[in-house]
Image 1 (spheres, one colour):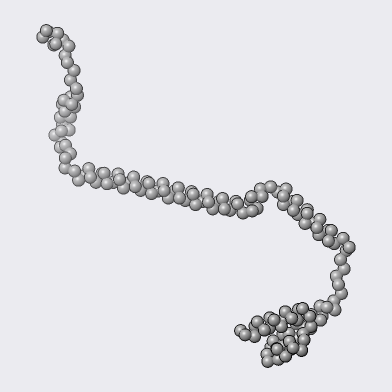
Image 2 (cartoon, rainbow, N blue to C red):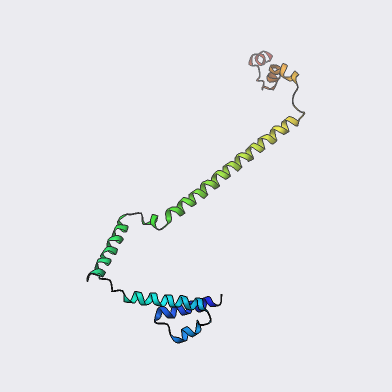
Length: 159
């Protein structure tokens, strides 16, 4: 791992210019690094011999016009908040809110069911329920619980 930083340093100095004798002396102890650097040096020489690419005189102007057209197209599409990443954030937030609401509703429903089951169990355990005899005389018991009003004819006769 120690020769990796040295190899990188030598490669960077090669990119800046030709390999010096001092650089070759630093890599002399490592033949594989020296072979890589020589290969890199030959590649740089071959690339330097290539002719420069022919570019029209208005190349920069064309590139800038293309960039302007692309920016105008992007601005004309609308919904810039969608492109900025707001839509996924909004969708994720909505999903979390819906999940929380459904979880809360499920919790409340379970609480109501538990309360109802608890009250049914209490009623079932209770021994103070009326017997069957009370249901046989239901009409008489119901008449007894109704409020009696004064008999007007009887009161008139008593006076």
